Image (cartoon, rainbow, N blue to C red; front, top):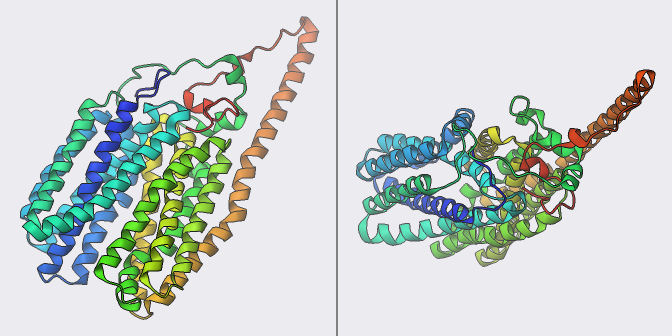
Length: 471
């Protein structure tokens, strides 16, 4: 694994972000091309549903194994090997015609994605100083958003001119970006001894670290998401809210085209509006997070942004024309972008470095699982309920879930504070006992500051006023 030695490696950040954005562009390009290919081949809704499920299920099922693999195997080896394998699989997709074979190859692609996503996510905190991670996260999200916006546009142009084979070959080429990133990135983690030691912190900065910060990062042996109350409540809240509002991805095409009589162009514009909103939302959160001096504030930020997304969905059910969905989806996308930054930063803060890929994989599995459940619920309910009331119900359900989590978040935030007070009281009592015992034989020696030594820069990220309030 590798730590920064005082300076952020921005070249690595831009390289990783470019590789991620390039592959995301290829993924969206391929998804659009494959959906069109199945439809042109006469496949029904069951085949399209199978395609979506194949692209999502491995991210959920393989999360524990993929996260452990990304933590234990050299990141360079993983990115190069998986990138080459995905390029080969996508090349086979370009010549595959049978729906079952297409779905199987898509599932294999998703297996590779289950590994590379947590691998790249865990690399990012090792590339930069704690105070620079919000900006680095915003850069990565910007690349992802641009890739997601450009993929469908390229698919429309290429499929119209060349059919589906050329877009899939282009997608195969985009996976080579992972290979290039794996070979060129100076930052590496997993499967290697540390190439550099964390920088020493000034004494004042070390002593400023509250006990909660030291405990938050924990040790690789003792830390688990399920044992971390803040991580548990954040992951649960995100998963449940996404389950509630995720069905709009299935419903909105019928809502826009049939209920609101919008054109196909308007449907594409509305979909792009949400993705466009991610950009300012991510950068706003990156600036705001510097003022959030504890992990509890990040969890509250996640809750507020989820409520904002749900409110926009609820308001969308009242619009008379599809045009009015564009500003609502821009705001919802901005809230979604901010939520992504808050959640990623909290995961980086709480998880020990050696288990960070597993933490990101588990978080991603919860998000994908919520999305899958939302897709299924939306598709089933559409058979008996019209789109407008379904949109309203989805938004209201998401808002109610966010409100229901308010006291849960409050309890989770208070719990570490209570444990801190108990820990401080125990230490004070121990010092008093030690002082009393010392008077029996010899004077008590002054207590050194050794007990406050911070083991890594991640622990230092919680120091109030240290200039590294976010990681």
